[in-house]
Length: 227
Image 1 (tube, rainbow, N blue to C red):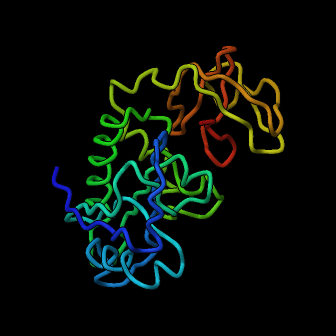
Image 2: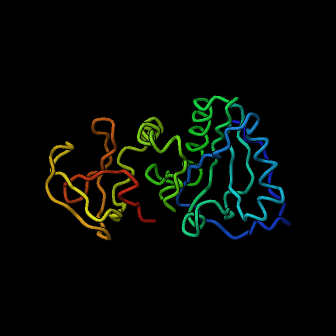
């Protein structure tokens, strides 16, 4: 896997230089569907005046042809709110109409697997921008996130979330007494914290098995993984 280095200058105001010990990888989409809005264009953008004025920066941009790195993985970028910035590597996926989003996703998966291995980031901590701020990003992948995570998962990821904790974000949420979406058992409420045992796919949707033996949705609109 080749990664082109096109790093934001240290003199830029959108490169704070603060240390990052990444525990998560955050996936974004550029939301720019214009012809030519590829990784090269976004590499120019993130070094430019507008990005500095907006105080935005991220670590990698991926299109259907290449991966470009803009920040070292041990420096904070500004891409996912204060909590997300302090915890995660930011990856932007291009959605330009003259590119192949399918190929972009495949390149992104290669990059994610490499970062997971080199930074010891668990599978469960590959998350969406939405997870940190509620923003509808990555807009295309949000509707297909579970399938994306399923394709990303490897044998090494099996059981990798055991011992991690989630907090309930929804006001009320069903838990289940077996891995079956019809097996409703009881409800839990916002703010409750649970320890995980495993993650599985049930009828094409991700579900967590809790340490208690019960089951709950893994949808990050309703539950959030704690750092």
